[in-house]
Image (cartoon, rainbow over all chains, first blue to last red; front, side, top):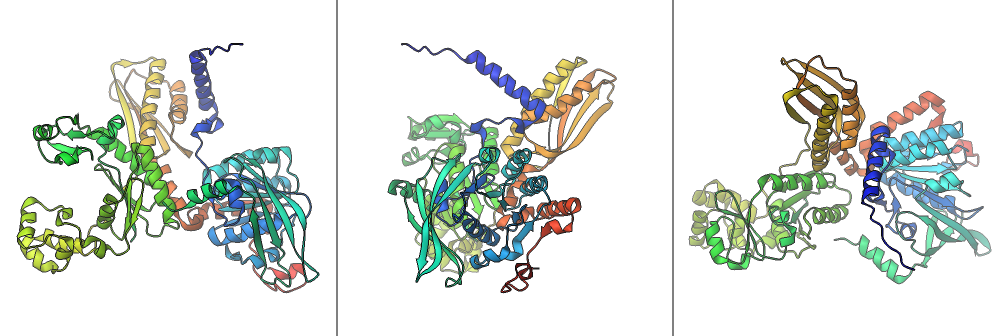
Amino acid sequence: MQVQARPLGGKTETLDHAIEAIRVRFGSQALTRVAELPPPLPWPSRTPLDRLTGIGGLPRGRLTLLTGTGTCGKLTLALALLAQATQEFAHAVVIDHACQFDPWAMLPFDPDLGSLTVITPPSAEAAGEAASALARAGAGFILLMGEIPEPWLAPMEAGAARSGAVVVGVVDAPGRALAHASSLSLRFTPAGWIYERGQLVGLNVGARCSKNKLAPPVGESDLQVFYPVPPHLSGEVRWGRQLSTPAQQQEIECQSAAV
Amino acid sequence: MPICCCLAGHLELARRRDLYGTPVVVADAEGLVIAVSEEALPFSVEPGIPVRQAEHLCPHATLLTSDPIEADGLRERIAAALYDLAPCIEVRSEGIAWLDLEGVPSPSESIREARRRIRTAIGREPRLGLAPGPFSARLAAARARPGRLLKIDDARAFLAPLPTRELSLDDEQMERLDLLGLRTLGAVASIGPRELESQLGREGRRAVLLARGLEPDQLTPWQPPMFTSAHRQFEPPVQDREALLFVARALCGDLAEELGLRGAGAKQMRVRLVCEGGEDEARESIVRHALSSAVELFGLAGSWIKSWQPHAPINEMWIELPVLEAAGRRQLRLWTGGDGNSDEVTAALERLQERHGDAVVRKPRPLLPSSPIPSQRFA
């Protein structure tokens, strides 16, 4: 069987004309070529999650999802990220529609509460409105505790892309719209409890990148999440071995090394 | 004051990337050499000599005529590209870009990004130097390999063994330094500024300060443009709306190219038609989000022209962008932790409180963190 290439010159011109017409009518943001999209800047969270993203950090201006059913450590990781964000950003915001967020739980991670703001919107619509407004205004870090309605996802994405806000969502199982809107999805699976002297102190977690629009997926990671309760009064997240290939790790280290 | 210097070669040479790796000589309209590629330097071809002499010294070199406008455009493009990497940048047509990294949270990221953007702009790797001042940073960059960074902590120790020709003095002053036995920057640094000032004038004092690494010269910060416009004159006067739209589209294209060159966006737009008889008709609008592409600009200007009914044939069309903003806003990202957006975030939180009540926004303050009752732990 022979395949002959057909000239596409005329079609390309027609397509260009159609693209320009859409932009004139609906604005330049209505349609963007992939090649024209700026590469996402990473926010180094200083956790092994940075390696899973493939760009050396959580993407600025994009939505990152931490998913997993039941007790799998995703909220503990999100709190660790939030605590780190409170120290690095002027505004770290939690949008908590279901009133699940307790600042006490993140105290062991040594947050700077001065830059933390908690939004408890009365409805899911209000949560979407808050996420969209704050992403557009340029809040450095936004933690979504739960889903937001589909109509608000596009404004939130556009606002975050404009301001470079880091948006992280924590959900058990994301809906189709939220999963589609995310640029990076990390799925956590519990792999067993950790006991010390007969007491439950933590959780072994398998972390896997289930969706990545930023870079090729970079392996998996095993994490040991230690709960910030006695005897670990200080609270910490200890990071386990990396299952990425050595070549991938070396490549990331080369990228993050100084010039 | 950590200064990063990027040496990219004279920007006149970057006009012909296909000639990289070959000897190239660029001459101005007066017949003097203004730029020389590294491959021509071994033949003793230097900037400032006549073209004929350069041809004699290096007959196989490609001779180019300078195009200051294009080189200046490239300089603007590089400056716009580097603008959001450091609070203060300076770019010269000689292919030197300085970034003042004072206060930048992650200088290494800025340097890495500057290297990437300059490489994209000129098509080859720049040499990088990091030192306490612009002079020592430039000399450090000149001694780095392409694409590599040479970091200098002690500028005086680094400068000491370098020859005095790095001071950019004229021939007479250099000869006088030679007669005084001052052949290295270390020797110049060892004498007092007043002593050399008495020999060379003001340049002598400056030379001593430079040789000591005290950096008397400051960077001249590049500023994004704040106003731009484009216009077209019609001869004979035009009444046809389609012709006006055609010209408006072309003007918007020119403006968009200029905005892209400068990394700016228009916050305000004004279209002015000069009618026969000298009367002006104008329409203007302030836009919420800065316009930067030709499509965006023409979307607004075209909508006005389509409904415009001028009372006389048009002699001239002006499209003016009185307020340019986007490039300035990009530097807000340099602020630590996104402080530059604090006002907008605060305003957004206030709007949420107006709509949904004060209780919707909460800033947790520890009250009794050890309390077993969750509601008592935070205010």
